[in-house]
Length: 184
Image (cartoon, rainbow, N blue to C red; front, side, top):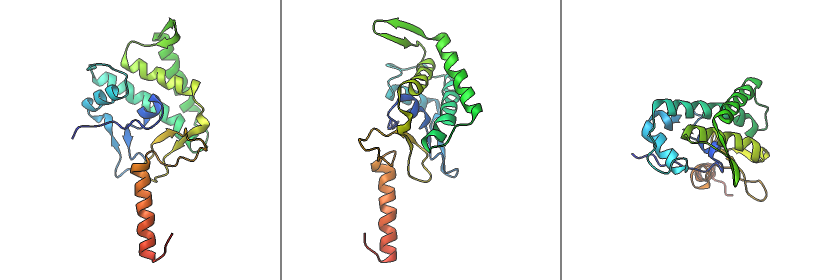
């Protein structure tokens, strides 16, 4: 089956973190980047690569390292906790490393990277620099673990995808009510 990336996080670095499915359910956890062709599909879907990127194990390993560093800081923030200082230090090292290899464009002024891995690491920096992380959430499904930026007006988004985890939750509630003989 062909991997079709779901880009629901609201920002490239959050979508990178979400390349691990069912992160909170060890029996169902799937690392989409275990297969190099999935990395290629993700890079194309995320707009990091306009053509067929040469996906090597080194690129995959770099992306996985960036993903794990970002997750180490983002996951606690998404549930209102403070990240571990070691995770923050690793994030600092990741950002410092990408700033050393990135170039600056003057018109319009922005940081740019030539390599896909560097582009993704720049996105991690931009997430922490540009986004309101008070709107970062973790999916309400107990096993999902995906993160997203809640851009709803009232900040009430609960699911990574209403059509996926949200539907499962509604179906569970319906089943429970039917089994208990109650109504909404």
